[in-house]
Image (cartoon, rainbow, N blue to C red; front, side):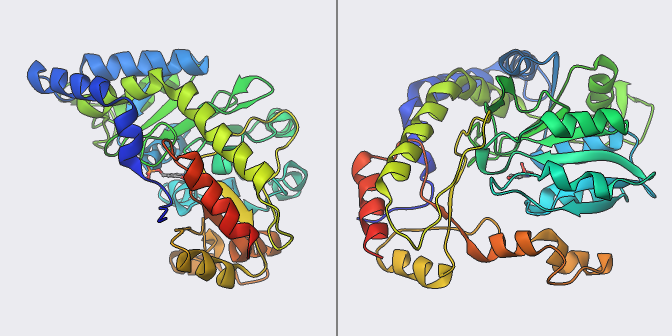
Length: 362
Ligand SMILES: *Cc1c(COP(=O)(O)O)cnc(C)c1O
């Protein structure tokens, strides 16, 4: 048996007829950018989350970058960012010339709220939370700190579509920034992203930023960008959104099978924090012997990926920030030990059991 990390055509096949119908409708409509599909998707996704406004953009990175910009955060400002994240979270800060201030994660791979307060200065403007791997972050203390120090909360929800903390959707505690990159739980068939907020003025600002800084065509009020979700992606996302809960439930079943089946003392399984829901964007285990373990899985035709091998503070592009190995030991340990197992909609029980069997023999 040969198992890939993610096989995207399987989830297409689950609802193939609906996708094809939606795509044809757009092709035949004669309207391809900023039309009914985008408007309806924005309305439906906001409703799904329990938020007031959603603005579609071109990618998750753009959602984050425009959110930081629309908050007026820029040069001289500091933003608290989870250290063990994908580089995009940090790029959104530095793209706006602000300074990322890294904070270590907890055992759930999410931001450790206990370590934030020490890093807050007069320059701090926002806390950036990443609901990593699909598990909603415990937002209780983070919201209290934001209130106490008058900070904005920006949530990187690129991996957490539909995950809740205490029955409230991730993306509704602060400004929610979503990616619809094809591998994500709510993945499009190309690039896409969205910013979610309850603040009408803020939503309006993102709408203008994504469209050259204009509300009325050719009346450019500030320097915007071209970052629009297109009609085709929006139409396909509407189909997937209508099935998101069932797709997330399927991932939960795969995770449960892994969690009960994998029995190997060399492997640390993922844990779920109290009050948090996990939608299993990735099923991430840890092993001190990762290199050998990954090689062994490869030899048995099981593909795995490391999310992420180089933490942002050690990335070449951030040499100028002046960090070195040892500055964030927990983050570095995680990046040395984490490994994502195959996890995708349409994965069969035989495939899951094969992965379990191979792992248990390691
Ligand atoms: C995928 C991802 C992004 C970026 O999304 P794109 O749509 O690829 O730009 C940002 N943050 C995290 C945590 C991600 O996983």
